Amino acid sequence: MKYFTKIFICEIFFFIFCFSLQAQIPAPAKSVPNFRLYQFNGQPFVREQLPTNKLIFFIFFDITCDHCQHVFQEINAHYSAMKNVAMYLVSLDSEAGMANFITRFAPNLVGKPNIILLRDIQNEFIQKFTPRKYPSMFLYNPQKQLLLYDDEPAHFTQFLAAINRAAHK
Image (cartoon, rainbow, N blue to C red; front, side):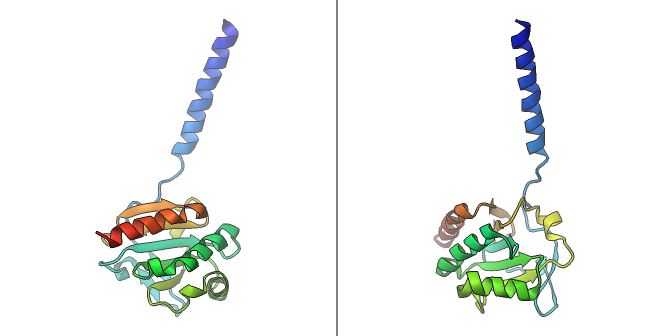
C-alpha cells in the first residue's frame, strides 16, 4: 500500500511541476503594445502609425530559421488573400539579410504597398509582444486587439481563414 501512495504522491508533484512550467510561458500580447521598430530608411515606426481600418499581421522571423522559410513560402503562395491586410515583417537581422530572405522565399511580397519590413534594433519585440519562438504570427483587428497567435508554420491556414472571415463581415 505504501508503494502506491508514494507513486501517487510523485505523480501529483510531477503534475504540479509541469503545470508551473507551463504557467511561466508568457501569453502573446493581447493588444498591440507601444513599440519602436525601424524601417529600412532608418526611420522609426511606432504603434500610432498602424492603420485603424485594416487587419494587422505581424510576423517575427529569423533569416536562418527553416520554419520561417516554410511559412514565408505559404504567405507568398497566398498573398492575394492577404493583400488587404497591413503586414509587418519583423526581424533582428540586417536589412540585407532580410531583403535577401524575402526575395528568395516570398518574392510576391517585394514592393507591395501593404508590406513593411521592420528591424528590431533595440531588441524590444520579444519583451513587448512575447512571441514564443520563430516564426511567431500575430493577427490583430483594426482596434489592435489580438485575434489569433500561432508559431507553427503548419497552422498558417488558420490565419487565412480568420482573414477571410473578417473580409466577409
